[in-house]
Image 1 (cartoon, rainbow, N blue to C red):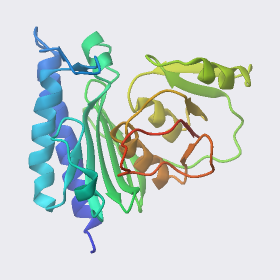
Image 2 (cartoon, one colour; image 1 turned 45 degrees about the horizontal axis):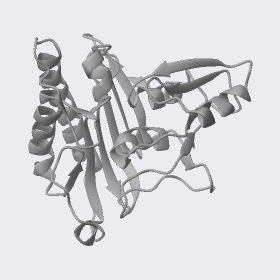
Image 3 (cartoon, rainbow, N blue to C red; image 1 turned 30 degrees about the vertical axis):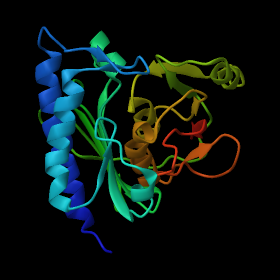
Length: 252
């Protein structure tokens, strides 16, 4: 099967922006509609609204969609997918509830376990990142200028990025190996985007994430020649596993 990369990238970009605008409406309202899932993670009206908008856009491609807020799809069905969309309609729901702006819309196209298109949109900040086999870019602000993101090699580790909500002792041990480095805390996939922009050089993660938390950002980083690798083995994260929980990883 072949895909039209430009068309599919454009659809994903439009989906992310449309979802982001709906998220902002709810973000700026009095009632976020906060509920809690079985694992005590928050769920809001914005998660569900964004999921529906993104699903409507991506349905044009006739590819399956695996979304955090979609129905559960068994591995017996998923394992036969060559291409599919992996979506986190609102990554960083805790940051959304705190109203600190550090949340994103994540959309990735996965091919045989690897992201080939990645779109990350931060609605409050109005930052839009995307990457595919042609490169990676960022647009921000009301008068958008497209910035070509460039891979930076051989740089010392001057800035380490860490989760604002999930800083573990193992992560702290990595940070302690670079006493000269600054540590930046941030929510959602924006942590990865600091690497994409060359504002940070290392992101260790010794805490749980799901595949939809990383897939879109991984697509942007791969477009720049960077990787997100498992801690215990020199392999990149893979997608559409039977268990959708990611292993611990380091992005650099």
